[in-house]
Each structure stands twice: as structure tokens, then as C-alpha cells.
Amino acid sequence: SQPSWLTDSGKVLRFKCYFEEDINDYQNFKETFSTKKRVRKVTVDFFLADNSIAMNETKIANSGLPQGRFVARTKLQKPDGTFFEPMDFIVGGEFALNKRVFKVVDADTRTRKYFKDMLQFELAPALDYPDDGFAAERKRQEHHRPDRKVTAKKNFYNADQTVLRFFCAYDAPLPPSALGPGSTAAAAASAASSNWQNNPEVVEDKPASKTMTKSGSTGDMSKMSSAAATAVGAGTRQYTLHYFVSDDTLEVKAIATEGVQSFPWLLRRRKLPMNSTNVPGGLRISHERFVGDEAAEGEEDEPRMVGWEDLKCGDVVMVYNH
Image (cartoon, rainbow, N blue to C red; front, side, top):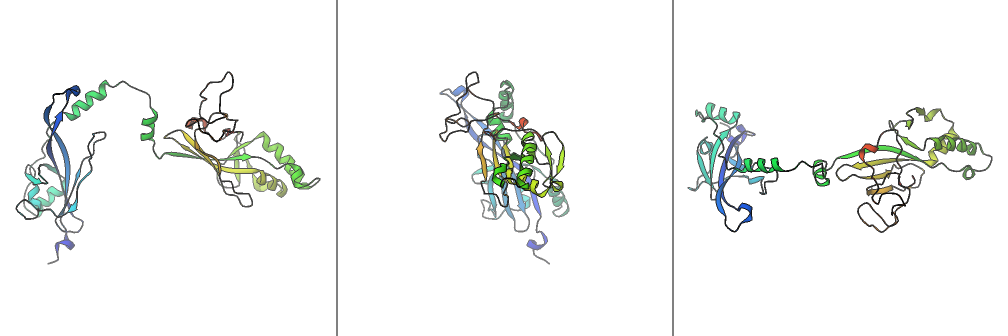
């Protein structure tokens, strides 16, 4: 016959159990306290290939306990020196491990079928976990907690690693004098400058030659004259804007363009005031304020920052005079 590590490879029996531990109950942080039981739920995985066991405690958010992996996969011995077997985890039974007594309350469908077909043993129906009062007390505490708006900390936990990406462009066309007086390219650059000044911000619709202006119309760059395309390409920089939802910060990074001097960052990650015109100094006052950012007369001391609702395709966003 074939060995068990070959015939039972990948077969796992899963049991649900719990153990109780004593905890000190300090009521309103008084000097006197009482001792009560706390139920900790554990899942046992029994690997038939080598009779190894892995145990994991069910995680409960904000429980204050280091939950998760309880015992890494390994072969465990009973107090009598023999190794654990599937019959040691029958529903309603108990087993001792690491100076704790575990009681088995349930098993999954495949485990029950394995016991019935292979071991000719019918497992008992599932049992209920004992009530230690923790769930009811936590529900009562949350019920009396006043409703509050989404705070910065809550937003950080819920939206961690959530980043919105936008593709945009900034137009700074070269003056006609830079292309030489009387040249065709200079005239094309002048016309292109006049056209692009009316639409200073361009949001990419697709990474192809078509672009969408803030009015929503599309234009095909391939239909422009070569001189005009050169002039527009020389003065228009494409950027990627990342908005971090967790703390409402954003960064603007230039897309590498052949023939254009590399200057990757237009704006490092930080909060951006609405309609910002004054370039901040190098000394940081707070997370979103710099020296030189003092509010003008009649303005609020803390300006409104750019939010995700301010970033829409076709709209213009001011990034320190850009």
C-alpha cells in the first residue's frame, strides 16, 4: 500500500474548540476586583499526511489580545508521550496542550464525512460556545457611544493604501523668440500658445494621441502641423497625480518625456491648499503649512485643502501657480 504522506496529501481535518482563562475584572478602575472567565476561540487543523497540527485563534478587532497563530504546524505529543490522532478531537471531548484544557465544539463538513466514511464514527452535533459576557458588554459600550463624523484616524484605517490616480498636463509653451525670429515654427508656436492659454489644463482621456480639454472636446494631435506639434510638445508637460485617501494628501509627478530635461517631482506628497499661488518656503510649520503660507487679509487662517471631490476629468487644479 502507498504511504500516508502520498495518499493523504492535502487532506486537512478542521475542528473548532475553545479554552477558558482567568482575568481580573476591574470595575470602573476600583482598587478591588473580581476574577472571571474569558473564552478564547481556537481553530485546530489536523494534517493527515504527517499527523501534524496547526492552531489559530480567531481574531477579534480591538480585543486587546495578541490573537492569530497559536501553534505553528508541528507534531504534538499528548501528556502520555504519544502523538495526537484524529480521534483525540471528537466533538464534546477535551484535550490538554501547553497547560491549557481545550474543549472541541464543532467540526466542518469534510471532517464529519471523513470520520463517518474512514473511521466509522459519527461525530456529535455542534455545541455552543459558553457566554463570557464580553460580546454583550462590547455591544453595550458601542451602543452608548455618540455618533461622530468620520475622523482622520478612522479614515486612515478604512482607506489605508487607497490611492486615486489622475493623468493631467501643464502648458508652458516656449516663447516665439526661443525658436528664432521669422521662422515657421515660431509662428506655429505663437498660435499654439494662444490656443493652449485658453485651455491651460489638459486631462488625458487615453494614453493615445487624443486628449480631452476642460471643455470636453477632443483633438487629434496627428492632424496638427509638425511645427505646431513640436511647439506644443516642447511646452506641455504631462503629469501623474496621486491622491492618498487615507490622509487627503497628494503628489504630482512628471511623466518622463524624451528630449525634455528630467524633473520628476512637481509636488511632493503633502496637503494642497485650494487655488494655491504662493510657493511655500522650505521651513515647515505644520503638516500642511509652510513659512510664507500666511493667509492674506480677509482670508481664513486655515485654507481649504484640495479633496478627492475637487479632482474631476476636465477641471483645472492650481498647484502653486501651475
